[in-house]
Amino acid sequence: MNTFSDAIMRSHPSNLPDDCYQIWDDDETIEFFKKFAQINVRLADYKAKIMQEVYEDGSPFTRPLLIHFPDDRRARLIHDQFMLGENLIMAPIFKEGATSRNVYLPGPAKWTHILTG
Image 1 (cartoon, helix red, strand yellow):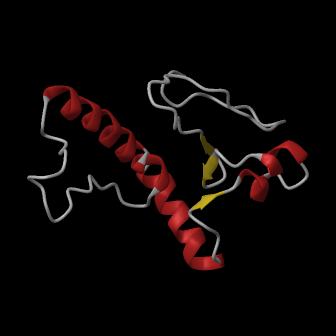
Image 2: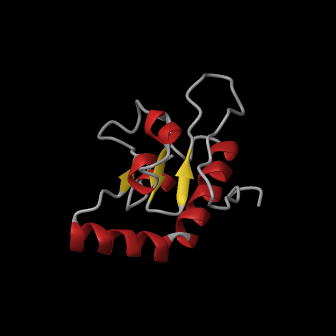
């Protein structure tokens, strides 16, 4: 989730790397991290634009949907999704074992799934 929620991508190795799971612990994890590191690189210019907004006007880096959709009553009720800047909606899955979830996409914007197109 760090790829979509922070200005700088981190792996959080902590100060006890031998006691914490690391990105290099197995091949599957390395490939997973690689995939999201590549997405993070593709988002670099977009994140730089957001960081400039943060600096200039104090906008939050990650935002509730209601900031960009203030007249959308349903967006005001969403507490398990957030926006990265004004163009990306994140909908993390918090339920263990789940591989999908329902996502609210406010209109009239057109949305594209970043991983599948």
